[in-house]
Image 1 (cartoon, rainbow, N blue to C red):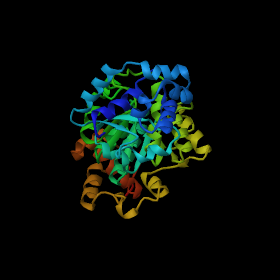
Image 2 (image 1 turned 180 degrees about the horizontal axis):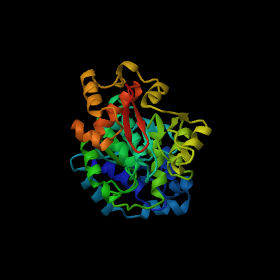
Image 3 (image 1 turned 45 degrees about the vertical axis):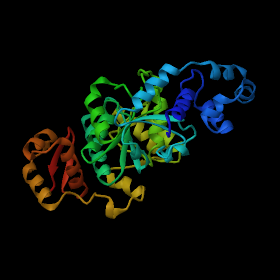
Image 4 (image 1 turned 135 degrees about the vertical axis):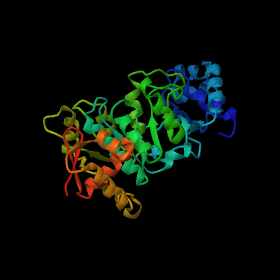
Length: 357
């Protein structure tokens, strides 16, 4: 914003209890800017939102919260972006209920780059985590920004995979000054340094259960498509997939065993029309991503030969191969995915890999 006074009015509008996003947008449509709203008389406001809400708008004291938020926004890397700002994500304007204001930690401009959401179970299988990591690394290398929710499991694996190749975006369900779950503190710091943390909730907001389904619409809205890696039949990831479909985004799902509970949600989505995907290339082709810039042609030949040599001809786990190759699991997964796409190796149950020639 151009001034603290202007931003203070936006903050005031979003900090009034009982005045949700729909009412906030209604007021902005009627009055233009928050300053105009608060300068209007009680009768004029009552004509738009009713007397009770009008009285609440003009009487609520949020000065302390506003002061804290403005001080937070002055810290390096912190931003508060409103609907009136050029940095506001244009993709969010396409959803039914875009947040009036968002708090960002990291690179504000990253939210206007092409993105793909990756979501899934908080308690995935080892193969599910490996898939999330490798897909995220490859798609990030192709130029897409991976968006997820920084939860344990698939979300965290997707962020880690993305960070091995570039920036990533985490949409969180707490205030931007909090980290949840606490185990993801180091991950949150890495995202802040290389990508962006996003929240629509006021600073200090704790991890309330109702906030996480709400943040899912932002994950879906920021993205061109949504990939569900593993999900149970009643998984919250299916909410994100539904919101993505409602916003006109592509929905992708990785199939799994018919006996696995964590495949039920993905199979349900596929039955409903989601695109079944077996590789990152499937997603890039569906999104019509330029092949020449996709970055999925595989590792350089010397790197591929070296990796095949250290793999040998017997099945090998990812951890063992990482030690042999002297590579991080994230970097290794990206290379293994390319070799698998080329038909030179295959993945086996238990997170193992084997050469095919």
